[in-house]
Length: 126
Image (tube, rainbow, N blue to C red; front, side):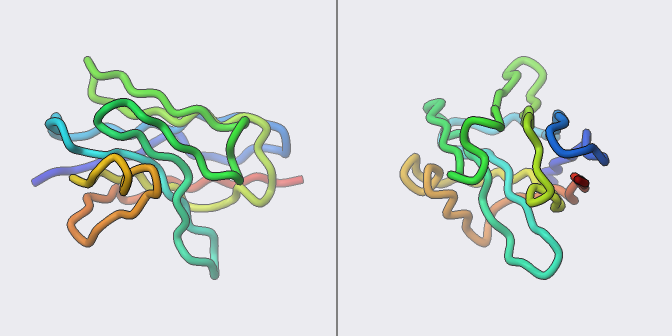
């Protein structure tokens, strides 16, 4: 069974930084999209960033310029470097993997077959 394990969440002040990690229990073949979504209390889950199998990375407007996605292919770990954190970034962050097209990946159109991690909590206070 495929497992995604997130880590790196925590509590920081406005302007602080955190780096999230997502470790996958399996190597995904070509055609898989990976990314991060987040869900704040009382709100729907929203896509943050995704990376397609061809390496195309797409950020949401809310985090563009502040968050950086990277992938260590050797270790099979997905990282999310978050700088300039704001209170509105407070949420549970989830790692996802899904076999979808590059177009679907760019739009973070996760299907019901997507794999999800258990989430890691990020709290940003002013």
